[in-house]
Length: 160
Image (cartoon, rainbow, N blue to C red; front, side):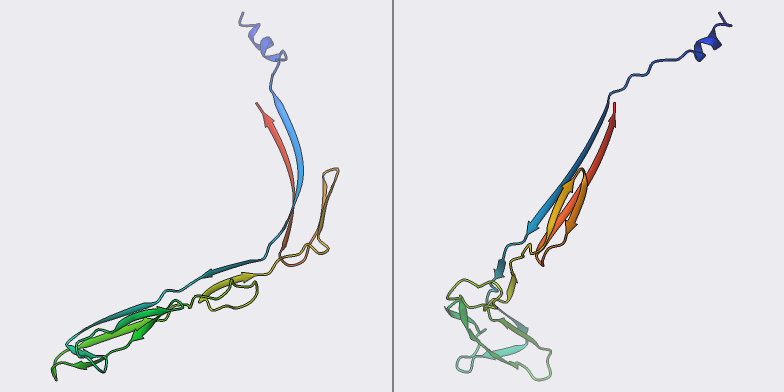
């Protein structure tokens, strides 16, 4: 039996496997549309301080602020501050951000409107751009600005 064992290793053995092969080619052409994105900035007011007296020019002790809104922009009352006690520590901070007015019409692509944060993109065009597939050979010719052409060739081999 020991003499037959090396001979068994020399005999061919069968191997079984499932094998799958796929080849795919594709092209994708995209042309951007015109777009405008706008964000209105809000009205903002803040005041802080210590060791000061305040006035708006008429009334003492007021802190100023935002008044009634006209077309989305609030009226603003500024104040002045004076040191309460000479020689003592004091601090005073006042800030105001005027918000964007409400527009009378929708923004036009490419035009600058009254928004603080505005992004506008013109429409793309394919122009002379083209893509072809011939027997898995991909040819791509670039288009005009605002277009994107992609060719893809994928080979997959699976062995189970």
